[in-house]
Image 1 (tube, one colour):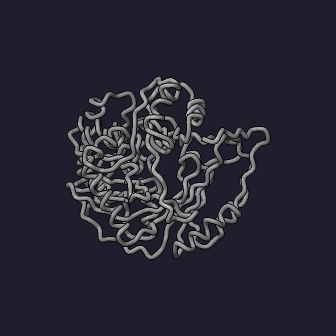
Image 2 (cartoon, one colour):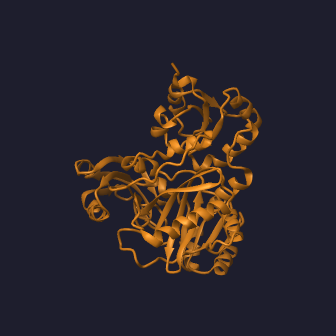
Image 3 (tube, one colour):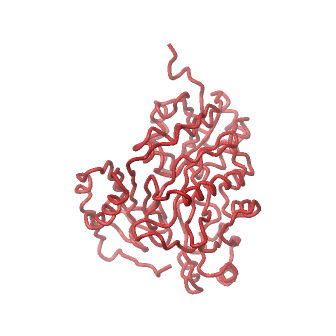
Length: 427
């Protein structure tokens, strides 16, 4: 009888932001035994390295250069490699190249992780992208202001390489530019930043659903398979994700337009195999690409699997192992959602969060998670990762989701420690 340990081995580079609770379930691996690649010196990895040993071999590459790490990995004889952590895509690509395993090549990796390289590659392919300029490390305020003037107001200032909306600013004027530089500080400007033109909002959307969305795609042997579209709730200033839902409200011709844009963008970036999370904004001039990410979007596989039989984690592993078969298009007759509730722009220490227990009793609510308990400091610069709490569940329709969204702020209240609230200038 064939056992789990007899299955072909597939390597997964695992880090702090990897979706551990789903991946360590052997059922998610489908036809493979997973080989976990970790760096035990990574902050906050904690007990996870030892926990992973229960679910397959663990390769610890701490302190090793890429050649030594590849030699250690080859002993496990994996047939493929992947990662679900945005910050590990580049190192996974280097390890794949040194190990002779298929993964994104250097050009594709650069296009996926560098905002400026991605914009250039898309523009070269004739795809409309926001105007952009790179602000080299060490720019002073005057130089940054000149670049912002050249891109035009309003514009967005963000790290050239990064994720989760960390240190991302909406710049409406020269005074906003001064406030942003003051808030980031000189140490954060040691890395390159990017100015991008701001894309105007399509006015067809209400105050509950945002005018941007994402397309979740699986790419195998150069063919792009759009699986679903994910709607968004309006971001919290300046650009922190406040949650999303599957499916989006788009239908008909507008849906076809965004799916087509995601497909041609993947091809323009040279992606032949992988799982993509492509963000697109709906503007008065039609859909415009925001960015393409080379892994499933955070929380999206869990939402999709809660209302369909498609597991994006498993499908991504099948692509890495060369065994992918396009799944049937899911029939989505319910709406799965995930809210991220953020503090206002500023810093404060949490004193008390009231009402979370009431949320757990509501119909359709499946999970409530307190990310920043009493005593912790909230800092808006942590971006999407600094949310206060999250709520995940399923409703019957988009109208029910609208009603629940409006009700949420009335159920949960937050108090802060007196004297710790430090509001910041509107940026």
